Length: 346
Image (cartoon, rainbow, N blue to C red):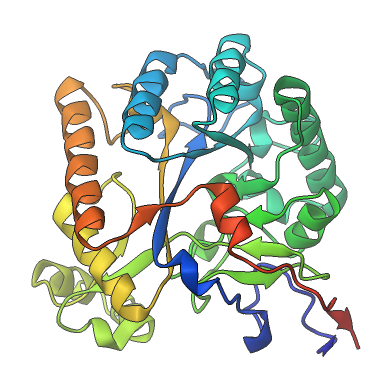
């Protein structure tokens, strides 16, 4: 099969119709949890190579125990400072050995060697660094994960969702089987990042060889006007306070599947909306420092942490009512047939 010469499978371009993945019907509708496992730092301060810590381990252990008891096998996409921390690597390695978690890769370029680029907001998106720099940082992270856990990672999410025009090719070359960096229905171009508007919610093949599965993060439009979808939402964004007014009136809101800044009732509405769209894999996410109070804006104290777990209690109960079970990374990969025909540029 030949692809148009201008479609190289990069993650900033909408996939071709034939690149959409047909998941095994027996898989049903399932959900997955990816945890952006990263160092703690001041989210309001400029990016820095120093001034961070890896101290939220007790919170991470509590979170892992909660999800394991709930039958959820998280994918901890893990960045360099965390995997480089002995205590964190030992703890997470035990989860992998127990079969209760998987480890993937998560790249924050400002703290990931080699340190060759200037530290800036623009350079915080690894996919927009020079190809050679992105490749070198990705290889350094993969090598460190392999040293710690005995295997190279096969799942990836760029820090800040920062994939670029070369990322899919580099991920294929590095042996990754799944990327989950595309945050469909979000546009970060105003802050030097990628624009994911118009990209699918369902998984699809990416990369020059179409051997990399893209599993976008899940985001729904909810409200009475949700049928207008992304086009209406983007139009409202250009009209000053209109978008906020529509959201407050419960006419149109954009709701990602995350406990960070999203209420349980909003998440439940988003689950139902995505299922109505026919989305087969609901992709939840949050940041690991949120598991310990005081590190992110979402869990500032113990009351917030209690609310965090209350959110999951409500959301997991709703998923169970809807017959949506958790899926592990292996289960998803086994439900997807390998791409047999390579997609070569014409």
